[in-house]
Length: 374
Image (cartoon, rainbow, N blue to C red):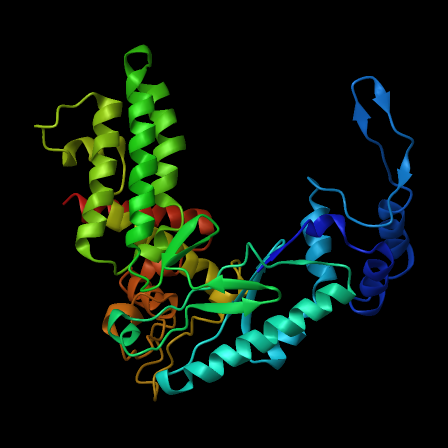
């Protein structure tokens, strides 16, 4: 769900009241927030003419660090509304995502529950001077290809005054998810974007030093290959091979290597981990953050230290994660709750007991590098 001009319509009085009574902000801190929001004016300037200042009673300053934070605090009551419908949600600034799962027999009930939840959300937003952007809201039903043939999926869902058709794919924070979670669309988008950057950098490569070319490739190509790459764990090998080909082409561009030459020595010379190792690196780092509680809380909730039924030895390793059982191998093992233990438990014991995030990352890259090029 998307909110229309969300930051511009926040009621200052409601926000201050919510900070005080919901979050316990008081005294000088509350006065500071009140001062920060009050007595702001807005003018419009066209050519050499400027309007009279107008006092702003709504909205938070955009482009500030506090803007998104204050919006999230302002919309906190929405969480209770969604929980009352047993709907999971995740919010990022003015973008709210609703999620709910059900078996085939309960799909109609799920649809009804989601629509009722959205209506309640819309009512709350209207009362709190916010507006749900019906036209930008997207809906997608995710299932396995086999299950999708058994679902009588309606053509659309009604959200407010808008009829929203079901999408084959949706974009979430720059990641394209398709209805079968195959990640085909995401890999296609990465391929398109990286090839575009390869052509751009290639057109000026003869003017660049090796160091400059490496900087550009790292900024515009490797960053795209690494963005949210943990989602690609367990994907079909042909998809990973397509991404590996892109990385190989990037290495050839930096080092001016012919296509006929074997690429592994050149990747090793650049000290680049191959695609599959980069994915494992990301999952291992997320696992370390979850275990040390330096990462997002929702990832910590997905990991659990393995506890044997009976302690056989006092020196039993306590850094092993418990791997939950899954009913579907193709999709179940790709979830973080399963992929994290699989990757984490494969690491050496000394690496799992690293004292700091920096030492862990350094040792992890050395470990994966040795596995990839031996």
